Amino acid sequence: MPLTISVIGTGYLGVVHAACMAELGHTVIAVDSDPAKVESLSRGVAPMFEPGLDDLLGAVLPTGRLRFTTDYAQVSGADVHFICVGTPQLKGENAADTSHVFAAAASLAPQLSAKSLVVGKSTVPVGTAAKLRDLLQQGAPAGVPVRLAWNPEFLREGFAIRDTVAPNRFVYGVDGPSAAADVALLDQVYAAPLASGTPRLVCDFPTAELVKVAANAFLATKISFINAMAEVCEAAGADVVLLADALGHDDRIGRKFLNAGVGFGGGCLPKDIRAFMARACELGADEALGFLREIDAINVRRRSRMVDLAREQCGGSLAGKRVAVLGAAFKPDSDDIRDSPALDIAAAARNEGAVVTVHDPKAMTAAKLVHPDLEYADSVEEACLRADVVLHLTEWKQFRAIDPAKLATIVANPTIIDGRNTLDPTGWRAAGWTYRALGRPAV
Image: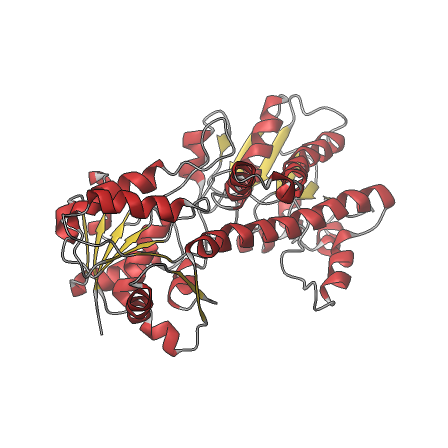
């Protein structure tokens, strides 16, 4: 049965969740404090690039099942309230900034009724849900018992719509006398994907809060492991791609996330593992996650290694050299530049005196705001014109489709460094290029 749902926060998580809930047949009111964002979303224009999102907004807005507002009073009749605000890293600290979560809860509390369920989806330090329930109860109308559940999100940028309507699992964290009713209500929210066979796990608050950060810590560990192996391969003259292929045939290990390169970035993995370490320290369990410090260090070190390779290929100095950077987003099919390895590397090369020109299919506008000192080009060819070295740093399919023979005619020096190990070395070398990559032997 369709429900009335509110979504608090229309950032990446919130706008995707709101649109997908409307697509599933629910009536959705999404709240944000930014009037300009609300106005844009009401016209069907998302504040970020996510494949299929603008089309989805265009499909559900005319139905009347989705609307955006700045007024919390408009959500007072909702059956379920999803808190979907961000938890960025605190400036100068590893810990997560949960102030937006608590502010959203404080604004929402007066609108609650006995029938309504508040559901946290934001990624928070373990222990937050219990504190949030206390805050909600303090702000709720007199006599209204607060119902709270924790339902972590597992969105991958570039696949967010699919991950919302057809995820690989649902996790419900519930507690208190309304737990059974809360599970039943969430089952109504997700009736369609559950009917299609999506697994559903019910647990306590702390376990639900830990699932997302534990998953990200594991993925970060796997990525940094293969990047550590890339360092060993470079020292030994081995090939990390062939090594990863061999490891991947072991079904205990698997091939996914064993792609050596410049490492992970974005708004989740880096800040989540740091916040996880900070919270473990507060709980007195800091030794348990000490290994994550090296995971973080390996990840950052690969960016420096990319600059080292560029410098080597330019005769020992980047001063005055023209460097073409292919990629600005932290991953393809996204315009997200948060903690982007590509932009960190571009900025480092610029700091060494290089003339750096960046091209990205979707992230140019965001990159220009953060790094106005870099140069930008509207095409691969423009970025690579007279380049002394080309750096491939975001694995967009457009870059994998480049004709190396054609590109060789416009660069000053046909040298490419593949920071993602996704280009074809044989094809580039056959076209006359010097091809280098992290963790692979020079030929």
